[in-house]
Image 1 (tube, rainbow, N blue to C red):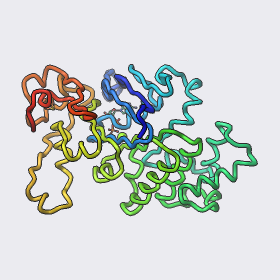
Image 2 (cartoon, helix red, strand yellow):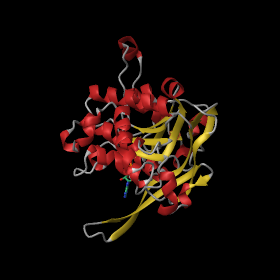
Image 3 (cartoon, rainbow, N blue to C red):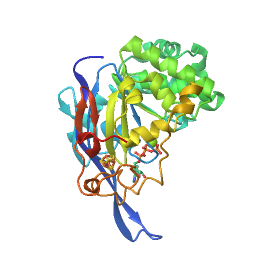
Image 4 (cartoon, rainbow, N blue to C red):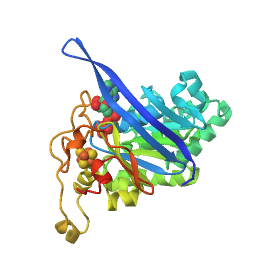
Length: 330
Ligand SMILES: Nc1ncnc2c1ncn2[C@@H]1O[C@H](COP(=O)(O)OP(=O)(O)OP(=O)(O)O)[C@@H](O)[C@H]1O
Ligand code: SF4
Ligand SMILES: [Mg+2]
């Protein structure tokens, strides 16, 4: 992992204006992302976890400027991407890619695999038509597919093979950074392991940096350099993988981790589970103060009034919780 961040995300905010009611007669704001500060270091796998709707995908999309930030900065190579229009973004698009859960959403059913993988190469003028076939075959080789797959259509492939094609397409422009948004979640467990190993091999080979969004904490523990925990559009905690799993500080992280079964039965019997009560409140009307206070087992009076500061509690271990500041523990 490099010493300099590849991407510096500062006070990133994303609100969606939506229409509510049967006829869309009421306008409202979804507070999807609120003041997220994050450095993504070159060569690392930074995972984002948290319950559904907590803003993981919105973070990925807003970093890539696929959603326009409401405010804040995303600094890449000295340039704030938030300020760029689509044309000015184009040279950066090559470096910053995304792989989705459902490869059907990125693969045109009428394009062969070869056309799908070759399209970004032609778009960014990275090869002549004569060179294209060789480039596509190399990329297919990189993702473990034989060259003859270039002639096939997405519907002729298995889910795992389609995801390999989506990865080859993301790799086509020699990117620096890839958002993997639930990229393995829809696959069978045995195939998931293959795609994870492929992502790790490609990271080694090409020095890639990943923002890895996932629900499966066992996978996150296996793959991550650092892990960020999100709750209702805010970062609750960020730490190295080992610190986060072994010494979590935030009550929400503790509750999330306590839902994962231990592999060691003795440990499993002896530990105390913390069950998360209730649902995540609506991002249309998030709780004041700490957004977790309506579900937190150790909430204090201050928690409902004042937003906890994002602090470095230990070297490299960041957390937003009044109880951590005052030395209490969950
Ligand atoms: N395009 C959009 N328009 C309006 N609201 C949106 C849009 N995209 C996301 N949201 C809302 O923003 C909030 C955060 O959504 P997001 O998809 O980022 O969550 P997530 O953590 O990725 O969830 P999941 O684990 O289910 O994928 C949710 O309340 C969601 O409904
Ligand atoms: S700030 Fe308060 S409510 Fe929020 S997690 Fe910490 S103790 Fe719980
Ligand atoms: Mg998502």
